[in-house]
Length: 265
Image (cartoon, rainbow, N blue to C red; front, side, top):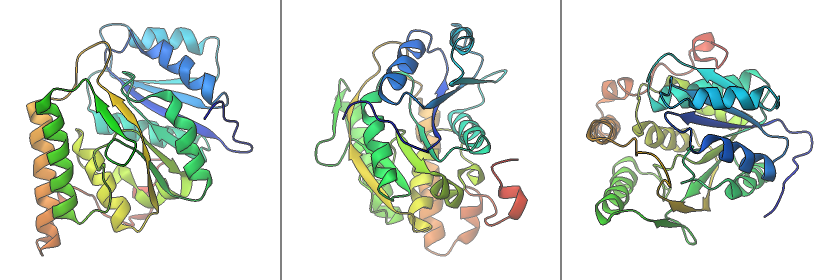
């Protein structure tokens, strides 16, 4: 699919960054080549390599580009949530989020948007459906990802093949139903919880096959602490399904909490 013009829709793409100076300008350009009307919001955690300065220089000549600059490393989940909130408060109809390292190809964005326009709440860029693939990962990394998804699907009863994908697109209504800002997880386990919540709240989900390629430049953000947090999160949600409801509150804040759950907070 080539260039897509979404008539009458306010499209936003959320990109959390830390030390992505080598990638960010080319990524923004790639997004705008395919979705010219898209607003891009970068959430940068004070990258030492000057990522934010590059974004600022682009902003000076392109009003479609926005920056949330944060004073330090505050975590992946809070960065995504900050971007989602910003997009919603600026009238977004469709919001996507993706990594900045080109492991998520901009060419997939039009297909994700098309899925939303066809009426689904959530479109997930999936490595594990027919047509999806993973390239340039070690055997250990592939095994970790496959096992993490298998465990999450089994223990949480999820009918989604790629529960941990960070390449997603939401309708405005779908995002407001999901309320991801209630999630109390900082690392990539946040993505599994988003999948769990989407299923629990009966959102319509479609998986769009993607080719996932390990980052071309820079260093992976995955750590043992992040892996452990994700495992603990799945365990707590699984136990909550067996009756230990209080464990769910450790992962997800109060639901339907009126203004406290609002994205405008």
